[in-house]
Length: 371
Ligand code: G6P
Image (tube, rainbow, N blue to C red; front, side):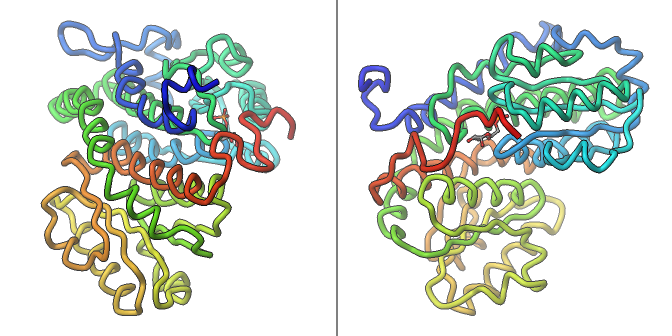
C-alpha cells in the first residue's frame, strides 16, 4: 500500500533513500572502543581464519557484483587470493576447494537455490562457509558456519538496492576483519579505512541530496535502445551493476565493460548519440584516473554522449563530459558505495518515466528458489 511506501511512488525508490540508514545499520556495533573491528557472529576460530589460503565468493545477480567489488578490497587488505564466481557455475566445474578455503556466500534473501547448492558443495569439501545475508534465519545462513547479517531491513523491490550496498559494506568489514585477525602489518591503513567507512552513510546521503541531475538525465534518455557503462578497478563491477539495473527495470539493452577492454571490442559499438556512462576513479597515486579519462576522450571523439560519474571538482574528467554527475570524495575502494546510488536512481527514474512497474519488473522474481 501507499502508506508502507512512506509517500514514495515505489518501494525501490524508498529503499534507495533508506541506504544511508541501512549502511549505518550494517556498521552498527562492529567497532570496539579501542577501534578494533569485532564480528561476533563469525564464530570460526581465529586460527582457522589465519590458515585460510584462498577465498572464494559465490553469489548470483546483484549479489555477485557485490562480490566482484569485494575481491578488490579483500585481496588488497589480506593478500589472500580471492576468486568470485557465479553460484550456478561453481559446483558443476569441480572447483578446487579444501579445508583451507574460505567460501563467502552473498545473498540478500538467503534462499537463492544456486547459492545454497554452492555452499552445500563447498561444505562437502570441508571448506568453511561465511554467509553475508539480509534475512534472519534464512536457509543459507542456517547451513553456513558463520553469518554476517547486513541489517538492511526488508527489501521489497525486486531489483536489489540497499541489499547491494549493505552487502558491499559487509564485505569491506569482513576484509578488514580478516586483515586484523591475520595481523597484517599496515595497521594504520586498516584503521584509516575503518574511520572512512563510518563516514560513508553521510556521503551516501549527499548523493541522494544532489540527485536532480541524474533525474533530469533519465527524462532525457528514455526510450533509448542501448546504453553502455564503462568502469575500471572497482568501477568495473559498478558498471556491470548499472547495466543490470537498466535491463531489469527499463528493459533496455545495457552492457557494462571494463574500460581497459574498450579497444578489444566495445569501441566498435560506439556510434553518434549512444549514451555511455563512465565511472571515473578518484584522482590518486596510480594512473587509473588518467587512463579512464583518455577512454572518455576516445569514445567522445566517436560521437558517444558521455555521462561521467567522477569526484566533485574533477575538472579534468568534466572537460569531456556531456553530462557530469559529481560524487563525494572517497577512497577508490569505497567509491562503489556512492557511484552505485546514482546509477540506481537513474534506472528507477528512467523506468518510471517509461511507465514500467519498477517494483515488479516483468519475468523477474525477488528470490530465485529453483535452479
Ligand atoms: C534475483 C533478484 C536480484 C538478486 C538475485 C540474487 O535475481 O531479482 O535482485 O540480486 O536474485 O538474490 P539473493 O537474494 O541471493 O541476493
